Image (cartoon, rainbow, N blue to C red):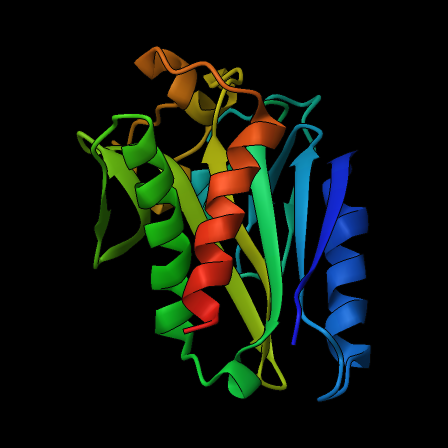
Length: 203
């Protein structure tokens, strides 16, 4: 069964989140999986286990949304690639842990193509370069299907991260591709990441 790719470009977080919820609740076992590729307008999002104290002195102009993904608090903004795999993981016979690993490995493999060494951490989902986080993963599973996904810092203003304990870790620093002297358009960055995801779920 083919996977549909949707390039939504720059969209507000909440509208896409609600669309993902509706898609997941309305789909049947015959529904084709989709992968959505987006950038978001500036927003802080709180995962299901997020604690408000990890919001420090957040900028009032940036909205805060309590969402239904796993994980703590993070930031989305222009220049950050966001990929949402809307997959029937039960049909694909993939566990939640496996899909998290697939998303992490897709980012790691893409960074490797640009000559950048990175790693995942078992106790803190995401992708790191010298202990600085460049990619985050947060998922929700309902009726055997996942939504939400990954965010990957490409070329953005990182300063809003200074106002939160990113992913619930007070001392966690973040980085991005442009700081590593790798310059690529955000929509181009999606190509190798999506390709890696598709290859992994077809195995």
